[in-house]
Amino acid sequence: MNFNDYLLLFCGMGAVTYLPRALPLLYLAHKKMPQWLVDWLGLIPVAILSALLAPLLFCDNATRTLQFGKPEFLVAIPTLAFALKTKSLGGTVLVGMVLYWLAGYVL
Amino acid sequence: MNETPGKSIKPLRQGATAAWPICIGYFPIGLALGVLAQKAGLPWWAVAMMSMLVFAGSAQFICVAMLAAGASTPAIIFTTFVVNLRHTLMSSALALYLTGVRRRFLALFAYGITDESFAVNMTRFRGGSWDRWSALITNHLANAVWILATLTGALLGQFVPPAAFGIDYALIGMFICLLVFQLQGRIYILTGLLAAAISVGWYLLIPGDSYIVGASVSAASLGYLLQRRKRRTG
Image (cartoon, rainbow over all chains, first blue to last red; front, side):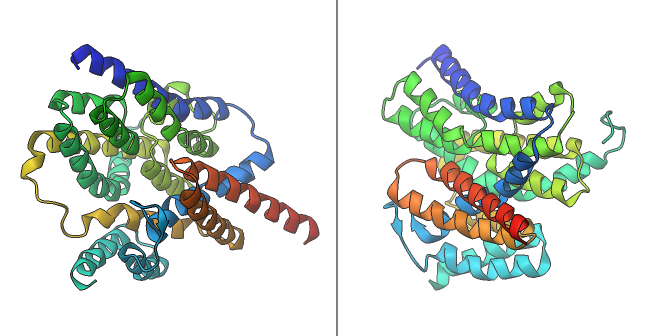
């Protein structure tokens, strides 16, 4: 592939990445949203975060099967406890990383 | 919200403070992407161009894999579209906090909406002490680190040892803490549990990435219905 082939490919990918991110915001930010939509969108962040996390913690991503007791899950328990107790984002990230690193030796 | 960017560096500092966990998480992933891209035969300038024009981690990994497998340009673009559709949801939710803001700002802001920047910005907006300029800086700092990391990976990836110090866990740790910030009542906990269960089931049964959108839309809708029923009866 030459320069122009790459440019065409990445411009196409860029367009289909950008438009879903921009259009809802450009449209909804200038509309009076109905209350049900506001309530529903308010639940979206917690739902998205759980939906992203759960398969990482409970499933094997190569075979796409259930897997209990993954290191990612075992480390998540104390990490979650730390987050609940301290509410510190930076601290939680560091604690998670250190525990996961140690888990690599122990497990 | 004030309309001018302001002379103060407060948004810059706040944005940088919010962005650093994202940046730590992005660096090894970007590095890995750069290495893979280089192994798949992409020149370093193509890697940089991709990260500048696309800025979507999972779609970029898929693109590299598809290029290595000899897929066509339309097929790669279509796959990118499907993989990134979940951002319509995030963009809609962010509109709650950006009502009436100039379209030029929104157009610039939208470019940097990723899973990670969305989660960080939503949490901060909700906390109240967050303005859109800090949010914009968070988005673009994360993007700058991403471009730098993928480029580094492409240039000298083969000399970098595999991830150490648990850096692979940075994004998971960040998601866990952001999830905790979102748990502001019983309905949020319930919605989160529903989303986790549906997501795992969907992930196991249906190939591809639709589980993220599928589970979050289903769980938020169920949560909303439960909330409304409780309001009516209670």
